[in-house]
Image 1 (cartoon, rainbow, N blue to C red):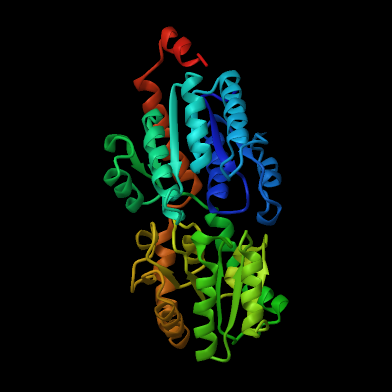
Image 2 (image 1 turned 180 degrees about the vertical axis):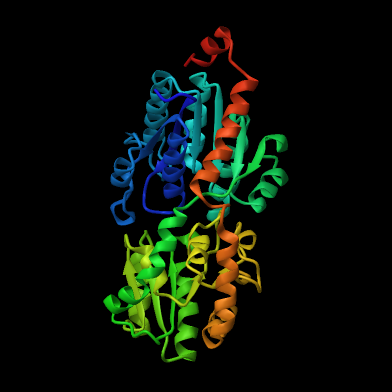
Length: 400
């Protein structure tokens, strides 16, 4: 066992995406700081990819929980809760740190009943902001309120999410923390060198303007809204190529809409890719059209590649992108505004270069895994020093 302590990070699934990759990188960095850290995760849909292989390659132990699934299911949820409680009880963890909504509700309860000394939860964007259902919003809000008291710290990835927690009385404000999710800054920066090769691979000439996005094809990410933005860009400039990268449950609808446009050669749907930084390096302007976000990692990744960004003002976007400095931030739903800002950057290379440079300068060190892991390590140590449970508390929490 490593020296400082033992922790379990629980996430609903380790699919290809910002939250999953942030958990993996944070776990790896904590292990380098002499913490014994493991990840527990449920199954990932095939269309969204899986980071299990990458976890193994990075030497991060992964515990598989088959019933820990994204969609609500009383049967699977109870089995997942039971499995997590057994895992936590037998694992000897000092800290249990949950991520995402489903894992947060089940994992915090399981860790509390198992008598874990310190429980943490990171909110990667509030779940109730990502649904339209009249009954899901209040139910998800209630579940977050119910689960928050288990936490030694409730971590938000943006100040906006922290204000939401305070407004809705989710947890105690003195236990709230804001900590951005990390990404592999060095790897992304190195991808900039692949711009010419990646364009050649895609058959895009060096002087062709390229706009792109990387997103999950799901309601919260509004891929159809991005297509509406793309329509306007393509109509205004016949030279532009648009790249759309990602996969998800709305993929059939996205494909159908692109086919209806009749312009597949200029609007290219690339699907799930494992060379995302290199593809982003081939772009001139990065656009994010989401309707809901936490702190989208794809934005600082684009900024690390010196790309000017145009994004909707949701979640922590405005905390990452300085409007008019490192890019543009516009209200969600205004496809014309997104298109106009992207076109303005394409038409003014000097402006695009200035904004790209400003974004690059703002990325380090906030999003480096080592920095984020260092902050987490301090919080873990602080909370562990504050309370060691009595034997009576351990027995009480261990009851069914």
